[in-house]
Length: 275
Length: 204
Image (cartoon, rainbow over all chains, first blue to last red; front, side):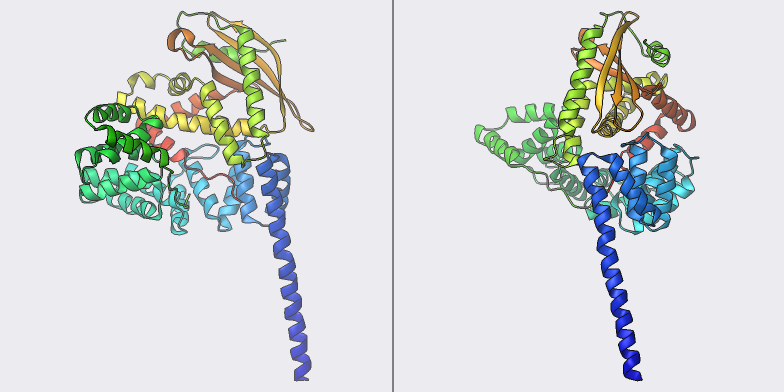
């Protein structure tokens, strides 16, 4: 009798496993078909596939559908429908949808502006580890959007995103440590954050760290590196960086300039994988 | 039959200083070439959609008069803004505008741009009438407001506005931005623009 029960139970478990095993790959394969269509630029097909999945409860599909409507890809731009899908997706736990929904509430586009709701969704997404949400939450505190302006809280959230590797947050922390905004003034920390963002290719940070290296401000003077960062910033449109680089270059040796040039040619942004 | 009602409204609002008339034929060729370039980039299946759109962003940047569109979007507040605000606004607006136009153009993959005609308007600009033809869906009327900026900035032909099915993107932008400025001043708009560009796109 006991043996029969065990056998039945084992069979039930096997059947359940087989069902789940069969269901999960099929589900993700469908999602992947939508993604492949999206990558091909066949947004109508992507929308068709993701609509079916979204109606079946896929939070990822709901999020992507929201994007298609918000960006007007393969369909007329429709913020209200985007909001509908992002809301369902966010309520199902999708942090990207929480973030986008929060931004729509901040903008007040297609929906009544509501900073409280924006804050709520951003906070949830930020605790899920989303760096853009951490940064945006910091900005809400910085500007006093729907919350009392609080530079310390702003710095706490922005630094969290900076530590995770978000270039804009790193640049912002460079400025905060420079100005003592929400943190204690610290030139070395400031230079360190500017350098971190510069290495990721952030042009404003490249310009700042180039000037710091030239003056030895919070970091040891190094004219070769200074010229490298200033030129890289200028290549991305930072006009003042180009002007400073021209002046700096005039006082450098031929060998130093050549060294800078070689480093510029070898430079590849070290992008963090947190975006 | 040229339908210009919305376009005309926009034309009145864009500042027009005495300068050479934009050649309608040249404007039509400019839009046609833009469409061909966009199609070529978007149909290149050897790279990811993100990479294709990055290339498209470069083409769009060369085709739009970002400064004129940006000034128009904030209306009279432009004159009242400080130099620092103007500089930051333009920087943020440029990222935002290119993002929007690239996404919209990217959204027309697989469709063709048909040039229906072009005409001069007043003493400065030209309007190019086009239809986006798509299989199995309604065609979309798109008008392009083009200005030859050669005389004052050596920029050449540049797009000032796109009117999709009678709706001007520049006007919609202006309405949205001036509402924000009325509510939260120029600094509020700058704050919002900083946040706007951080939305997430579709994920695999």
